[in-house]
Image (cartoon, rainbow, N blue to C red):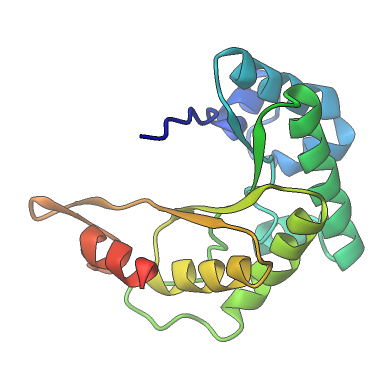
Length: 189
């Protein structure tokens, strides 16, 4: 059996380090890299062998709306710095290029056209920066999770998709009512 300890919550850790509430953690990748590196180092010191990059919002319009990632060059710069910070903090650990949900999907509605495009550029940038694998985290919409998975797989790197289901009628389900087990089977297919 493979055992691999993952890191902790980057955003929560940066808030504890002084990131102002409402600011995006990615803003510190370039402006306060030492703080991001220190969080990775703390996770590694606690035994984490897989570090997720500080890029949760890199595929989300909210990052673009704040002027942090409006161009391919800006996305590439954040991705490269984020991968480098994780590597510097723990050279022996694996680095997962992490992206969270875009916020564009709506429960029960079809995936918006072009949803995969929001994932394509940052996943390619994370792969080019040297991530060992890609991580589509905290997905809560099956259509968006599929789009993220397809965009990640197009890079040729292994891709992990994590879901955030909630209790629903004695089981776990996504907000649109899709049972978690069904969502996992759909993604595996």
